Image (cartoon, rainbow, N blue to C red; front, side, top):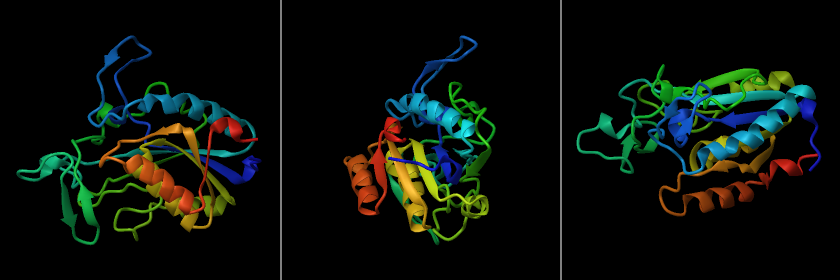
Length: 226
């Protein structure tokens, strides 16, 4: 697939410690698995890093997103009496909210980007989900589906036509970000070798891939971008 890099953005979704397995940091410290670790989540880093260097070198933009939740966030099972991860609640104006272990709490190591994610090519960071009573899967909108993060206006101002996505997780934040990008009129590409899914409920990853294809989103490996 031929890509006009100068009119494109690489969107790196939530490559944070709380979504990644255990690893050894650059200083030799062993970091435990994240609170919401995705199996093989750190496998997205190598293709994202390689593509980010290419984008930066050829006049493209690189943007990273990060969950940035306050303590007691509405997506945490611990915020509700008798609830456990995997349960769901109904939130005013936002519909059903799947509940998770407390994760990516503002200012914690879990909310930090993975040590091996190269942030040098990153031009801009979007922090999302910072409202206590409203989650945000998408890089473009909060989960009420009407409150913007500001990313769309930023990209339109730069003349971006194509959004290329990778990161975590396939069936939640990558899915919603990709669907919103396509709905907003961007040519949208999801990198199959740079995504990993939660798989909750069972079959959610397969459904996410099918939903993206049905929306006209291109699914390919990073090496197929020319």
